[in-house]
Image 1 (tube, rainbow, N blue to C red):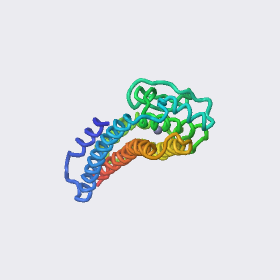
Image 2 (cartoon, protein in one colour):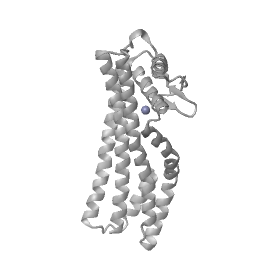
Image 3 (spheres, rainbow, N blue to C red):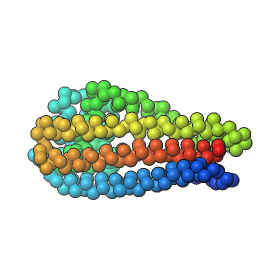
Length: 253
Ligand SMILES: [Zn+2]
């Protein structure tokens, strides 16, 4: 993606006789991307800090992330999902293909509040799947489309730039931008899926009285910062689309 940005940027700097308005909206979109990048960095650092902090808070009853996950699934009448261990950091995920909740090193056997919060969040996805939660269904159906679109977008945009240079025709460029925009749509659809999984996790932790008072607050804070990374990712995807739109409209002036 970076090389593509560079290629379009290089093209854009040829003959810089763009209109003042076009130039302003273009630099505006670059500033927007930089600002979102900085916010993303801050959110990531904050998330790391919060998780480090609540990884030191023992979970009541000394339960591991895997045990808490098992309990949450059972109490939500989900019996066909297995809890498994997966290597790596932050690799936790629910896999609907083989019906497993995969928990990473720092979650699976950890007996902390941060680990339990992540484990329960992943179980939230398993419960969404069991109940046919609409945004999750939509998100899953978008996966193959987005994979195809994002793998082809680079080539379509490069072809579009070549065509625009020779004939001034921008149609192919816009098709390429529409393909990039699919990734933005995907990251927007991801938001309700992620927020809802966290809401289900916290709801169960509270209603089952597994966590109470301050400890419930720790879990809520952990999941809130995790969700913000998805929000930043969505904003960043939107900013990328705006950048390309401003670039092509500027060339089109
Ligand atoms: Zn999630």
